[in-house]
Image (cartoon, rainbow, N blue to C red; front, top):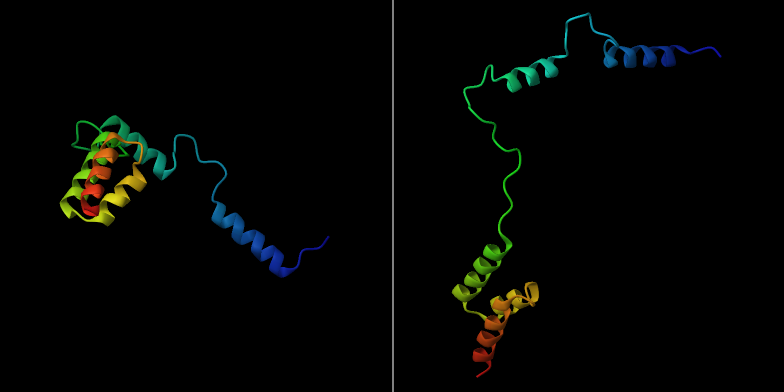
Length: 104
């Protein structure tokens, strides 16, 4: 099968973009050398590494904050939304009692 000029050019361009298959002995790709420098502590004044992902919040604290926000708004809609999201939480019963006060 004979390659046309377009096919040959495409293969050549892909080969150029792919880069060398092998590196000379002792050389590393740029990113690998940067990673090695970071791990050894060179080039960095930080003692420890910062976590890559923030710590997860305590779910109980998040629910309590959401209930406090509903009480701050003090609207029927705010308490209904809290109950819809956290219907089985103990604070949902308090939200239901707040809703009963709106009915009076």
